[in-house]
Image (cartoon, rainbow over all chains, first blue to last red; front, side, top):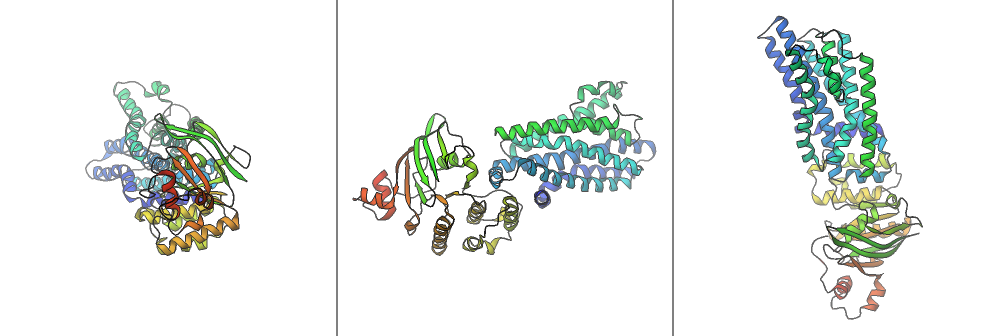
Length: 249
Length: 240
């Protein structure tokens, strides 16, 4: 049953061409820009630009748009057109649908993440182990964000509202980490000293891990295994809130 | 087994859409729910199906008020979910989710699904979406089925075929079917009971024979005539 739900989610996501292109293009635009820059720049500056900006933003955008925001819009749409009422009457358990759709979301993310990283492997030199670790932490970040998509979809009236509301949410999630890090670095301060204030944001753990795997920093704020634990705890916490949101509706 | 609706009240913005509705619906019968737009037909259906929580009153099925909604399949007027799936993929999904073994081949044919089950739902017409909606309602395999204007987009032959199918379902599987419909001409024999709502109040709930005995002065023939006699309004127009 979960396999069928996952298949349906993937099929709908891929067939919705406009949405797929819209969600994939931000991540792949940065890859194209990297290719262009490779022909204009060289050496350390180019490496820093791609590893410090283009690749992290690509992955952040991929997770956010393709997996998180499209899942939220998909769910908000399901809510608006009474799909949940239909599903409820089939007798399928909510966690079965949650897991089934999750398999679809994670499969799609991993397919496009691997493609994106293969693309970058032609431009910059990153070890195979780093690639695997990037994929691993990306999956943990999605694990934390996935239940949030159910909460947001539960709160928004329909997909149009969800689409508009996701823009400020994306800005909050992405730029609260990248901008803070950049400004603190420019100001000569260690961003790690301030990360405690951003510990609510799953993107923090992704961004910090990417910096490490791309050899831009020597150590992450906390050990990697702790990042995975924190993200798993966030995921379980948000999943229980998501369950409450759907029961109350 | 029976479905007992007692003193049901539902208000929207201070207006009583359902104003103390009480009725008993029995298994093995077909009920025709009539009323003008805004009379409360859809709200009553949604209350029974659990989509809308009534402000007051009780709904009891099989002597319990718990999980009544789990016994009800409500066919919404249109099926708008899974826009990027083919109709047959949607049906396959629901067949898996419901894990039902019930044979609906005849209904599939009656609704004309074989001719357009390969198209994406986003490209399906209103009638085709309604057909999907009706099919899924039966696929859910619930004892109580509420259908909203099921005959509206069917030609005369299909209407008759669907009517015979519904009669067979009621008798053979002991279902209770509640139908909201403004199209009743030629389908009278399907409806065992006629339930009439007006301004949120239930003003009639009787067999056709009882109603014909009660309203002997009907100026129009059939159920339309009964409806006119009871409400002073002509049956028809858009679904409410």
